[in-house]
Length: 364
Image 1 (spheres, rainbow, N blue to C red):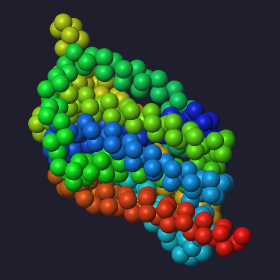
Image 2 (cartoon, rainbow, N blue to C red; image 1 turned 30 degrees about the horizontal axis):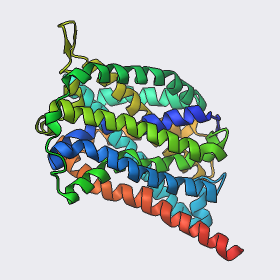
Image 3 (tube, one colour; image 1 turned 120 degrees about the vertical axis):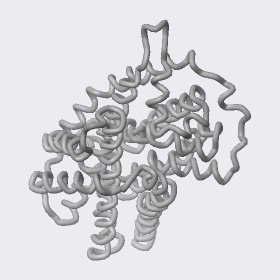
Image 4 (spheres, rainbow, N blue to C red; image 1 turned 180 degrees about the vertical axis):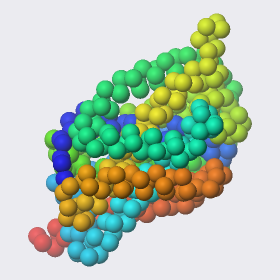
């Protein structure tokens, strides 16, 4: 496989945008419905859980330097069982990519081009994905590095324009939510923002110029990405209130429609759409590249171009059939997704880390 080395800065930008990803547009409604005005606390608490997960993933990087998680799996469990478990990890990366594809198509046909079939939208997004990754991962990372300042500018513009709309009464009274529901909300944010960071372990050792510095870079990037997500979700509750947020399919998009300054600056929802499409493109690309890289390592092959088109086509076809409707997706995200993400991206890496430590202990 072609290994285009990326810099630590590019790696951090990918992690930041990946962490924000779909969270800013998808999660506020579900969290607000569960914990009301305390919804803004969930992403802040999830950052603490995210930092614990960073310690886990950094522990794997330090325990087995230079090894992808798929190679580590074979080293711990043996060739056949290791390949089977690695294939499960890879398959879940593709599944996660297809859910993001579904969200992209649904968002565009719902709020931007309602007369356009989702299949057509997803095909266009798939062509963009194929072109970006087909040019090499290093080229893709450089492109995202160029887009990152635009994301920051759009974020700052949105925050500054919404500050006058904040109403502190929307978050009063504090801490009314039941602890169990608040914990569920924290787990939901973590399952979308922080647990998926495990996919970087598939290609991080080979695509990064200084992989030994990755643990520190990952920690800083997660803190920055978590701050972005927390600020956007907090603004949603502070401006719209929990009731309105819970009733909207895309609360942050509705939030941008609230801006009205002197009848001159109004309806800045294009800013939200731009931010979300940038972060979503990064998220689906990283998911896909992780799955593709892992599949090639399991098969012992190096040429990624031969499987790029078939995998993208498969991804597009799955994405339009994966959920029958939004209600089903919301139920799945609230239950099955959290459990699946925990098992694949938390429990599995934890078992691997324990296995590496035990093997090292008995060797010595």
